[in-house]
Image (cartoon, helix red, strand yellow):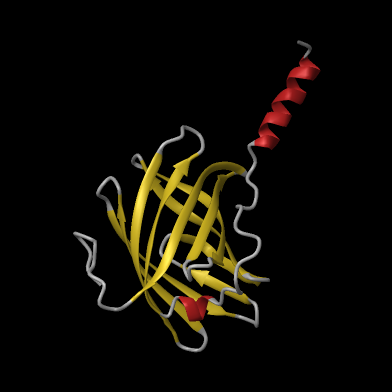
Length: 187
């Protein structure tokens, strides 16, 4: 194989692996308004899939949300399938009729959120701990309502524009009396 053919093949393979927007139902029943859906307690369950080695890590989360007419605060209590627990707090501030900026403990800079037709899109870089190291990864989340009233959150995770993982979460409204499934953290 010539050097030129090898370079072209390598470039095409690299482009094929580049991050692209996550796929989600193109016709949700209605538009997602984050500050309405996330007010109160919701329950999330899903998994992270490492697209490099195929490994999977399940997760559940209790999310307590409040909205003060400008900022949506989401306190997330995570339990992962390997037993790890974590707590993160999103603060998503509405900056216009369809735009938001957000912060969280591990987010680098600010997250950018926007309503896009029936979907809510959130893009951010976060410092993620894995195997004793910290990696700055980019997340491209798309959230949309499902016909059963839940929200499907699909995210593409990338490093230097190359897809390294996917996150899929189903988020369902729950009454405030739902028991906490976490062992180490309590809201």
